[in-house]
Length: 294
Image (cartoon, rainbow, N blue to C red; front, side):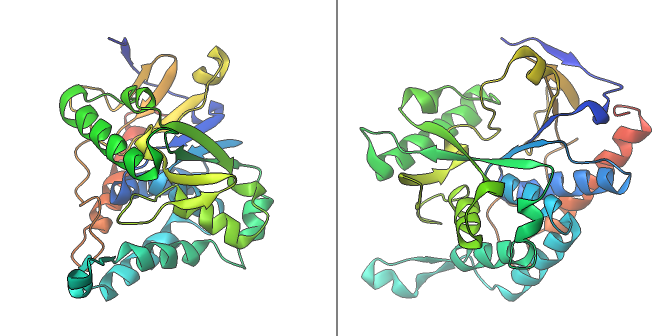
């Protein structure tokens, strides 16, 4: 078992790599927490890494602000009545609200007015993708990735699972700042959150790509000892047996103080994204008050 150390007095100014774990609506905790720290003059480090909704939250921090992204989400969810559209059931065709809600949300902060902010940002955002296993194909990789996720969540409760790679799923990173066009940038963030059948796999580069969380929900490329020491990972899942701020394998991890109070996939008016966001802000305020961060 990996040794875990409780951390206090962590210097935010020394962070060189900031990792945004995926987690759907749970990532609003990251937005609230980082939004508060940025309002207290925290600057984004030179290297950002994220996947799924975590990558989108990171992109929102590079453009207007997490607050703008939150308001857009609230408006889109308020207009959406249901997650599933069963009208095509007789033809075995299902429609999921995420297929139009998520792209519309991305457009609220990643658009023609903000794409140059991404390109010229001093922070580089490496977006983590899952490449299907060669011997399983896309469909088989989704099944294998889902099985690995369930085993990890309910049996092993690990932060960085090893089982997906044993199934042949591969992790890949593409830099958002280097996308040739706005459409490419949107496609990259969509691919990083593509979990069939809710959202279809997309072609990125030479092959199809899936939600990066199928390989690792808190994606980190290989790092040297020095890079590990300057990495802060923003989790979106609460681990009751671990401290709020802890060090493991040389990296520092910050987790929600309790289970984030929101459904991961819901996207209707009743979805409590504001509660998730507010928990992040309160956790950041408390972390500064208790001098977990300096």
